[in-house]
Structures are given as C-alpha cells and as structure tokens.
Image (cartoon, rainbow, N blue to C red):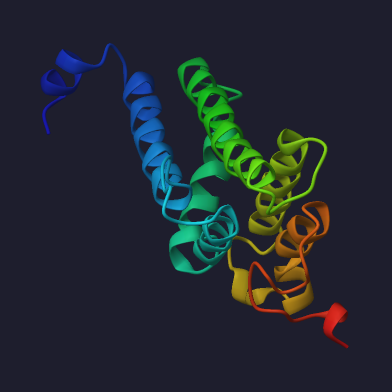
Length: 168
C-alpha cells in the first residue's frame, strides 16, 4: 500500500489505527452479542456470549483491547475510539441483561452494574492469563460465569459448563 493512498482516506496513521481498532471491536461485539435475536431467550444469548469468550479468537480480542488501552495514553484518536467501543460493549451487554430481566429470566436491580462487572472480570482474566484461557485453573476461568449466574439469580451451570469449587 502506498502512503498516498492511506493519506487520501486518513489524515494520519493515528486515525488509521483508530479506525482499524473500531472496526475490529465492532465486529467482535456484533459476533459476541448480536443486537437482535428475538427468537432466542436472553439466557441462551448470554450463554452464547460466554461460550464465545473463550478460546483462540477471544484471546486475540483480549490482546487487541490490552494493546489499544495501552496506546490510548499516547494516541488521542485511539483513546476516543476505545471509549466509544467500551460504551458500545457496556450498552449492548446491559441491553441483553435488561431484556432478560423484562422477560423474567434474570433478577437484578441494575443491569448496567452486572454488565460492567462481567466485562471487568473478562478483561482481568484475559490480562491475567496473558490472554491464554487454557492456562487458568477451571475455577478461575469460570469466574465471569459464576459472577453472572450469582448476580442474575440463575442456578450454577446454567450459562456454561459447571466446574470449580461450587461443584465439590
């Protein structure tokens, strides 16, 4: 690719990086938490989300977010895009949880808080494992599932494979 072609569409390399991150993060969000799925229950959609947040594809997403957040200290355009994407992820997951509350599937006082808790745990797990979920003990790898089930009033194991201390 020639520099002139890039500069025709983007005023700077920083803008290109921000756009690439935004495109990748939006694509992952749409794959992990589709905006619409009326034929599926909220519980099924949340279980799908957790099933997709493990394995090599999710490890790559974790690395992308870790690197993007690090670079936001030096790149204002990227910082703006990361903030926008964090808000989009928070909003989409909050909407899914609120839908589950409205349908009587979940019980929580604040869907937004539970969504943020889930995202924080997933971020922490990705960073702790060096974005390799297979390196984590099963009880640790299941922390986001346990948190979601507990905070949403669901039985243990409803959102994913039941393993860890609760099964002992």
